[in-house]
Image 1 (spheres, rainbow, N blue to C red):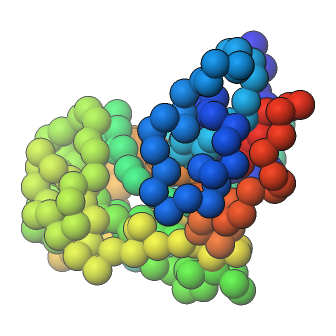
Image 2: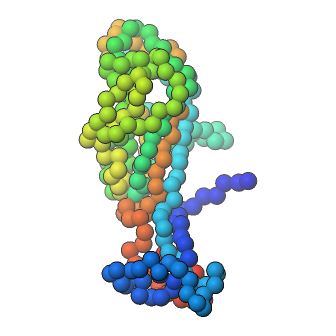
Length: 242
């Protein structure tokens, strides 16, 4: 088994009737998706039935957090994974539609300095041509008054609805003004984390580890889910992929 890399969205498809009316009719019928009397299972074209999902995840060990000096908060960084001694950030391709974020708290957090709150902000940030030319919050973990979101829980948590109230059992939520569904523009986007303490005396992280997973649909860089026009008229000599 091996990995394959694709540049651009992957569209799923199904066999359809090759009648060209289906490409122009304002009221296409489901019968266009069936084979006619002269067609076989390998005859006809393919119709786009949706873009494929992609998933990226990253594990952040305890040293990611415990090596941060107490006087460094708020602390902003780009989480990376290492391959062959080279650190790579998490990059969300241009135009992607982010539909879910998973948080795995693998080790409960502990803190020094008696803080009253701890928050991890998840941001997207891109370059020129991106919807995220400046860091934009897409989700928040923890809350200013809910240390128990980190200190008393391990396990998997999925992102709540926009504006969800963060609690110990629901530590991950989209902000009310989240742009999580926005097109990232023509520039790829980096995942950025911001760690913030509330209260305490020069607090620091003494233990804790987590994994983040981001699920997104690969779209064209302009945010379209499918080509705006077919690449050519329907033909019978080979399947159409549009």
